[in-house]
Structure formats: structure tokens, C-alpha cells
Image: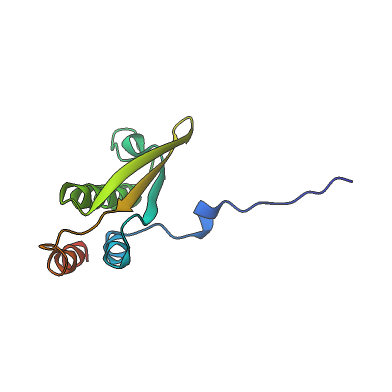
Length: 115
């Protein structure tokens, strides 16, 4: 018996994360929680010369990646990359325990900046 089943690509159904939604997630995340903020070949997809994405999508992806990097620089999260195949990587943000000095002050500022 042969069954043909169409499997929907989850990336086509789930809307991409925004800077604001990433900040909101981090604000509610417990230490160790993780979120995949992009899947693909980030460096290639944000390169304007390669034109892998339309300009609006590329700009949004650049901003999202920069926001994740800023969170890591502030010690709020770690960035992890998982390889799935050729030019297929998951870019994952892992929440860290928040330093007390950031607990209530930095996350609202990041969210306001991202909006």
C-alpha cells in the first residue's frame, strides 16, 4: 500500500520572529529556555550582494540577528548554531540567568528599542 502524504514545511506556516517578539520571549524565558530565531544560511541570506532574500526580508533578518547578538553581548543569552545540512543551520538563542542589575531595567529598554 502506497500512501502519499504532503508534509507542510513548518517554516512556511509559522511567521518569522520579529525583534519585538524575540525581546518579549526573552523577557518571559527561564534560564535554559531556547528559541530558534532563524533557520538557513544566515551570512549568505543577509548579504545584499547575493540577493538571496527580498530587501525587506533581508533587512528584518539582519535586525533580528543583530538583536540576538546584542542580547548575547549583554550576557542575557547565548547564541548556539546547529547544523542540519548544507547551508541549513538553526540559529538558537538560549536564555541565561539574568544578572540582578538587568533583571528589571534592560529588557523593557530592549523591547522599546526593537519596536
